[in-house]
Image 1 (cartoon, rainbow, N blue to C red):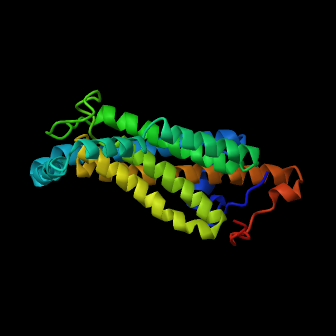
Image 2: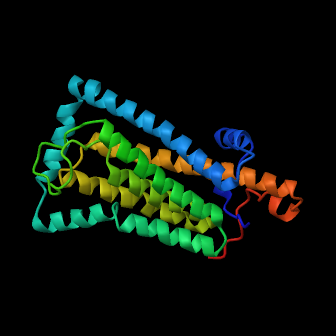
Image 3: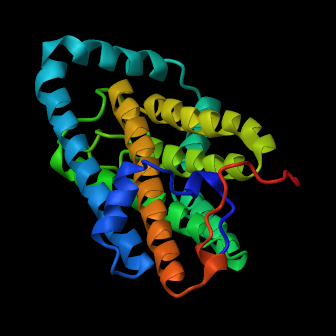
Length: 265
């Protein structure tokens, strides 16, 4: 098993990953990854729902609703045929089929190169975001902005959180996190990892589909999904190494140093 991606290496004191690995150490690494992913999804979903309830039932009535709506109204005043076309493209950057294709392509390349941890991480980040978003929108009812909406086919009461934003953060930032960890010169790609979700956020608000607090919440969900994917993947690595060591496979069990690999881009 090849793993030369420092960010996916378990750290000493990496609490959640090592605790999951310790509790599930008798299981296959794939099962550890799956259960770790489910546990992370449950925790993040609960936190997201609690935050949504606080936002909708406490903070918005207390005075946050007016500025939240005003920002969207001001953005929609900038609409034109060309702008609407651009925001449609911006929305697609954070939606199907673009994001699933990115996850699938990266995962397939990783599997061919035997970087199984990379495939596990990307799938986990994408799956976690989809699960948290779906459950949260079905649980927390928030009306979309009171403007003309350019995507009227979407449910009216599922404004919180922004799934486009969360998914774009989880996939694009997660991918750059892996690439920059392996090849430090690619840290320049963080510009794209920030710019693409920002374009998605602005597009969703200009199309009248989300408030600023919705896209901000989606950003936090995306970051949380990256953390879940790291935890589940690292836990699986810990168990895989332990099983290899028990078999006496010293080469497979040997840890990979945290030092950056030789940059060969």
